[in-house]
Length: 203
Image (tube, rainbow, N blue to C red; front, side):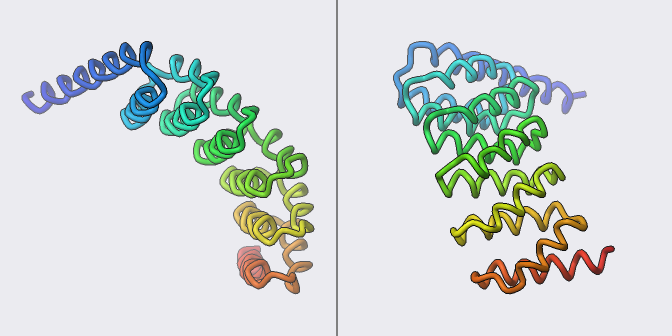
């Protein structure tokens, strides 16, 4: 019984801390906001998600960056929707973090947007992050776009694509790996050979 009372007490303590942080957030400057938002993420404060969503419109990029990081630590319907909305942020860093969060939280609804980034973004970092996230999601809708990404001139982009395809697997992936055994990049060649071998063993 004593252990149970202690657990209940700690829950109330967390709620009290979250409430205090939220109240302080309303009048905080950017630096304080960043600190509070980080703490809310560490506390997995579901009750603060609506407030965090509002901060995705904050003028400070650093605040928005911290908000996305915290939302990726709070797995709820609202936090997932907020992460998806952050994919449209104009800042590359915020957008990239949102892409990574989609993979971390396994947000299947984000697949169409992530696939779009593979071809529409001119930023290698964004394309690589999208490929990585699609690999985490293991969604077959991403196979064809990722295979197309293997034709990219950038080594980092091709590496991300081949690694993502390896996580998804399937016949179409095996065919693509066979075509890249002589890729100009040694990492891509090695990954393609390893993936092809694994797929043959499990087929």
